[in-house]
Length: 259
Image (cartoon, rainbow, N blue to C red; front, side, top):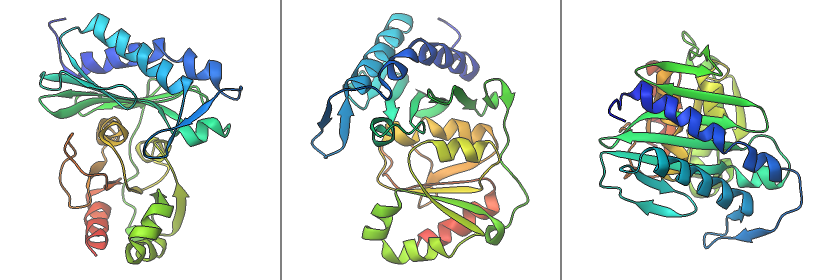
């Protein structure tokens, strides 16, 4: 395919993720074995089958592209276009019967995430975005909420148990920030941010396949997403991420996260 615009890549990502949608749904709330990976996180047959299907669909359609996936590693990361996959983001949600697990795919061009997909299989929703096209939920345009001061904001604190254990002073500040605080997990808070339902997400201990797919969705809806130092997100970024509906909220959160 000669046209590798963000719009074209985003549409391809929509179609490719749709082809694998039935796999996690087939296993959801049914009996399956759960294994523990080296980092003690759980993995199931649904994770592996879903990623295998996504990788096969990408390789068939774009044989010259690179791929990085959570379950099966990387190949050809030196290519100009690289696909980043998290087949089931929120495996703990998945194995406990919660519908708030996602399927995440990003497309990187020249190292920058130009298109992203947050599919919520059990909710029947697909959030897609890029700076070029904007973001949408199943075709309905999305926009982050504007004009909200931080003291009136709805703040999602992802991986709060880890932040509380490893950065207790920052956790205490976060719990005193905004009008509402909610302890959350995984990708859905970013979809809520892009939909104008919450105003910021602070996250911790992520991998590139966790944060790169959500970045174009947030940015396409007019939001901002960086690491805790305010730097753009890349494959080399650390796991501390903050996303905000507005530049003002983002600036204030960066100051808070700087300690």
